[in-house]
Amino acid sequence: MVDAGVSSRLRETRRLVLDEAARQRRHRRALEALEADNFQADPHADLRVSKLAPKFSDEASSFGPSRDALGGVAASADGKKSRKAKAAGGSGAVGTLGGRLRRNFAALLEEELARRAQLPGASASGSAATPYELAQVGPSRLPPRHFCAVCGLLGPHTCVVCGTRFCSASCYSTHQDTRCLKWTG
Amino acid sequence: MSGKDTLIIDLGAGYVKIGSVSESEPRQVINSVTKAKHVKTRVFVGNELDECKDLSGLYYQLPFQKGYLLNWELQKQVLDHCLKPYADKRPLSEWQVIVTEPCINFSPVAEALDEVLFEEYGFKAVARLPAAFLAAQRDQRQRGVSPADHACLVLDCGYSFSHAAAYRRGRLVPGSVRRVNVGGKVLTNYLKEAISYRQLMVMDETHVMNQCKEDACFVSGNFDADLAAMSRAAQRSPLDSEAQERCQKLCCEYVLPDYAQHRRGFVRQLGSQKQQQQVVACCFCSFLFVWERGLPIHQEQTLRLGIERVATPELLFRPSDAGIPEMGVAEALCDTLSGLPPHEQPLYTDAVVLAGGSCRFAGFANRLETELRASLPDDFPLGVRCHGDPAAQAWLGGRDLALSPDGALECYAVSRKDYRITGPPCATKDLLSLPDACRGKSAELP
Image (cartoon, each protein chain N blue to C red):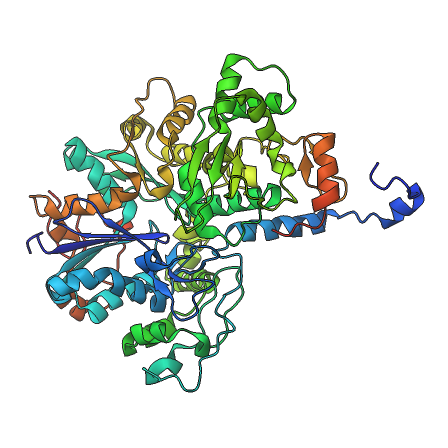
């Protein structure tokens, strides 16, 4: 079908089939990619501030490294930030505020859990779930639909190797030729 | 405190909607400090992006993470940029401000917001209110319902997530908030992935694809019928007139911006000649262009859009389409409703208020009504209400609150003097659990 001139024994040994754990990992990575703010890395990450350039603010060093977007590549240290950005946010209070609040969302959630656990009624009430967690909706009662990765219409069939859905033989051959195990979104 | 010198800032993860009470609609400022690929000398704060010549490959630095304001360095830059015209008119210490927070907020985030507003900007008074609450206020005032009789369900679909919440008599019903982690960001990323996989590598082009989503996508009244029609067209089977209509509505070209002649892409309907062949060709377009990486047609780059136009907003109703194990916004509203007292439920379904930018899709209200109608008992009245642009509803609600003759804003605003006494956060009890007293002052609600 795909490699016509190769014996089926070689084809079988060469074929790498992803197991369930690997597929779950890929799925989780795909979900994280959906939540990312940026796909690419910081385009100014390799910017070097020339030594001859005038420095506008002495407080530049108090800002620390810039925050990276969720799932994105972390930007380098503060020297790479634009001078305009430093000069614009040069107030002392915000600097300390920025330092105090420089945390990611996971840390915020952990802190909230810890705070709730310390409240007097927490141990009595049993679960110390935060309102944030309680508000999370559960799974849908409707069955999930699966779409062909190549054309976007309904995809009832699954690729044996990677688990991607396809709808017809022509879409499957396109998937095998171009994207099987090669696509990292 | 008169309402005349009030600023309303709807602080969203995607856009900041800001305006003073004297304006009739807010200014939408993108809430990001953006870096351009080819401009190494500066960053673009907020709407300075309009000055950027080439909007391809933009890198966003968002102060919000997962819908919560965590990075004040970036946010201060954007707010400074937004507040400049107002600070020039009058010093900020003479303004009072209504600012929005998410339905469920964390105390460090709320404290930081209060601290910055009072100490950095020095506002005279601050009312920190959930955006959904303001949308409920807007609904109550627009429909002229008295506050004691008002009940509504608010659906706030934003950038990071969507919330469904129930409001009664101007207060949130405790335990009624439901959050679906699908918002504008997820929709844009989904569209980017679909297009990148099938046609042209656009994973870096968040800004362009966001505009494509806004211009070309709409919510289908019947997604299954659209899928069926497109499948039949792809198999070159004969189509009946209804299926033909659906295919023609879906298949289009999206002309990408070239920043020389036009800065924003636009939808181009396929020509009327040989439309049947073009409809069929569209269904195969996806993999025809895989290797052609945007070969220019007519000296321009186009995307052929088909089922993606409806499959993208469909995520709001069925997040499981993308593998997200959550229920959609319609189901979330029903879930909220099921937690309310049964004899009061019809009061809430009569007013389902839409707010937030992701509700702006054409056909959203109709689709929500269809889905809710199918889930609710026959004798429940159902009214999906949107009093204008959904993205501006929270802002307009704030404006209505500030201008209301009964001085309701006084109940919620905390003055700088009180802040200095109590310190952040301004209210130790959050608005959720307040029984009858208002936050800030102990006046009774009218």
